[in-house]
Length: 214
Image (cartoon, rainbow, N blue to C red):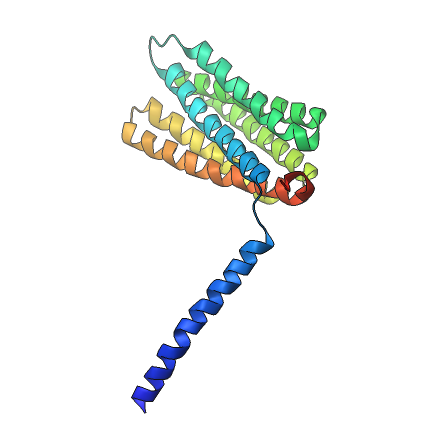
């Protein structure tokens, strides 16, 4: 009897695998990813990774005695915010793209002030700036959520707040000269920002499927 049951399982099991694979294949065919969708999502992901890496580079320049490239790195970091705003203009328009750039530049300016306050050990100013930083993150969340119904404001806030925490971890590790911890914070920051970028770009594609057909 056991041999009969085993034989039946062996015969049926491959069929289940084939059926499951066919079902998964059918689901993938329901949504064939177009070249324009791949290009948009990859570019958007790259821009957000640049956001993390140039922010980290700025922390290095701002906290390293004798560093001479702080202004150049800051200029490159601010350009990244323009690039992110420009990335959404084809779907949301000029005004919306400029608004996102303005919000992200504010995010960077506050972050720069936080770096300076932390270097000075000015805890009162640091607390004030942190409140402004999280308020700005709320403003960005509200903007993105209002523009796209697929982006729930609570979920976007959670993603942005985690990004702020990881930047703060990078700064803390840098000031403490804890290089191992800093490497971890940067790696975690990149991993997280990819998740955030993909969440936003997926929502954009879902909102404007006709713009990503080819």
